[in-house]
Length: 165
Length: 90
Image (tube, rainbow over all chains, first blue to last red; front, side):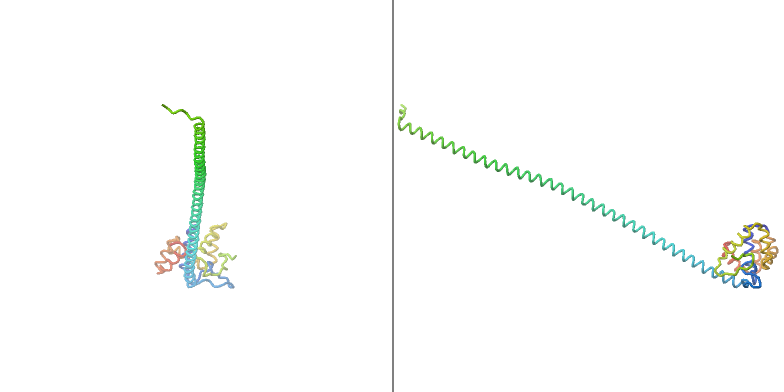
């Protein structure tokens, strides 16, 4: 038989198949003080137990995969929540910025209104003072005119002008 | 660690068959003289020596062919299939 890994593998498989009641130097020792060799039944039981172990390993692997998937979903969810929180914070900040802008605009508008009100008040006061000045001027004119007429009447009493022909 | 070839290992129901067989193959192929190590295994194991004779008888020295022929001619196809599956040869 040619020495190769494949041939050795098939050789050992053949030993399993044709081993009969024992597997000598393969798994069990034949030394007088050593443990008894594995029987065909032992091998079959071992293979059956191995099937159970394989299923347990598959189950364990599936559980690990589920745990990994769960952790991944939680991580993704955390990322989504963090992103949403970030978006919310940006929206809040933008909202505050808009409010601040409106407050600035309102402040400017109030300042303008105040200026207009003050201007209007000054204009009103100026109009009042102007009216008072005009009334005072009229009064002075009337007095001057009265004084003139009185003075003329006095002249007429002392030296009356000749009547027109 | 007990050597498989020394014949003082004990069967374990939790041993992975494919791993155990793979270890034997590796130990033989990685030894300084693989042919000598293989002959040592044959000398130390009557079952292995008997298997070698059966391989010559059923497969003309080809272990794979002997495995197939022996399984079909002795009615051990079920066990053969199970062994192939467990050893990863299926």
